[in-house]
Length: 458
Image (tube, rainbow, N blue to C red):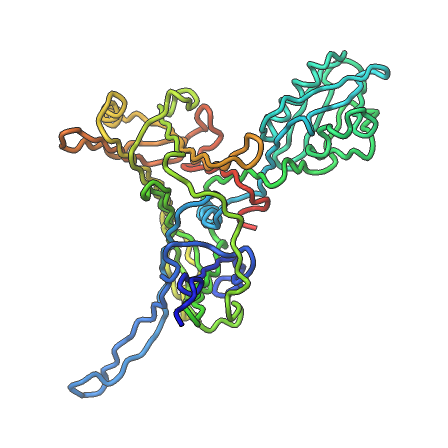
């Protein structure tokens, strides 16, 4: 009998570990990944020739240290795939995701009083919001309700709580979360206000709990850390009746590129050792399940934008149209052995990380013809890449945005041909201050919208 389809397709899984050199059981629910080359890791245990005996043939070999297990995992990128966890590990930071909010006729009302007698009804415009933009919409709606006071609303990205306050007018106001006639369709619970009682007797009210937002829609924000240490994974792959485990492995590089209309993401990892007799990873991989994966990232979903680093915020008019691209983000790490350990200790960065973006254009035009002049003049740029996927809910879509606040041109190339193509090579470096329209100064920042409700590095 031939092998089942499941057996012919190697299963692979990954899970964050806590101690370098000690594997965790990654053969568990939610830990499955789908690389295109799951069987790559190999033990690197070099032989040493021993030739102390006078003999025309080799007499012995021995082994000393085990070299690091370097391997690469290749993916067709998916917005919910665990490759986004590997990306977060390379970035080095991934705080708890921010909630996203879908407001419609089921949750868009605020019943309130701005004096003891006058009850007002504020209707928040339907749409998809971040916490900050929803706070603005709440203030707009309350001020448009015709009350005597003036209202403001803010959202804390640390506590995930909304605060509604009266900035002028009557001393106190009331939020009628419990007794309002529109309780069934008010905005209270989605914004973290309890509807068990009204909020009364004050000029400022902060949400009772972190705002949950709309179910299963999360905004993950990642800014590159100066150095990544203490973030690594156990990786296991099924090879017929064997389970090969890389006890701990650290992400060292990401490459993103066009792959036949899809977006490919390649991750390089440096592991300490490959074993096939783990006492921690389950003897089979029947428990492995995969995240709720929705949609591969495609090139036609991409928008590339560039303008000068000192110019205005990136806009539609700054869109450029490459026919190919590559993005490389690398952390250059060492591989050191120390006394008492046959395998390498956790790698540390021995040189500065690098971020390189290469854009290829099918033909020279007035836009990319100007890159040569910008290169020779030392004109700096900023840019972003956005991939927009399918709708999650309301007007929320799967999204991946990559920002580059300061791009320096490394090279410009116009090759010979009947139609002359153009190639632009850019290095992203630290910005002195965040340029207009961005909030980061590190060479790379990433925003991801998907359905994972916990930190990518939890």
